[in-house]
Image 1 (cartoon, one colour):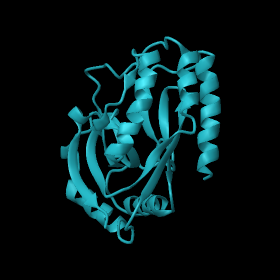
Image 2 (cartoon, rainbow, N blue to C red):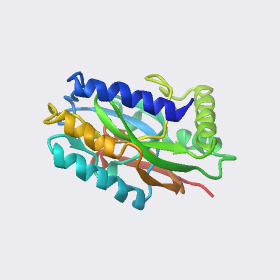
Image 3 (cartoon, rainbow, N blue to C red):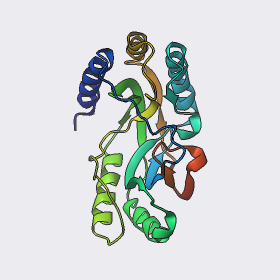
Length: 227
């Protein structure tokens, strides 16, 4: 995939939709009875990158503080949604050690992952920071995970919604009617090519999570350290 072009086309289409009022509001964010849970392998950005992202969030909040903004604790890059969130899923339905074993096997030969956060993009329902892997390590890991999980008898829903190929971090979701779409997109434009920094991944986390990766609803299952 041509990642810069993918992000660019997504931004063009989504910003036009936002400005014309054709955006999507997530009605589930504040639903206390939302029981959608799943299992995800993820990466968390470094503290310095999250500090840089917070500057962007602060400017977005200044023009519309009624939306849902991800706190530092929840910002992440999805490596693989192993079990996509669905209603009623619980940890006692799976054998966690079997999932850990497959991930450990998939990590053999993957000794580093480096990601460059530069610029922002959007969807019709969210604002994201763009992440660019600096080599093929993340792609290779994802392909190994796909092959190993699909060859197993374990419950998984990898690529059931879409085939993940990006390294973005969602930082804002629309939960209310936008107060000022023009100003919101103006802030996005300001950060369109902003350099948020580069970091080397030292740890991947396997977690049981809700749809929004809220820390309060997340259970850490296993950490995997890269050399």
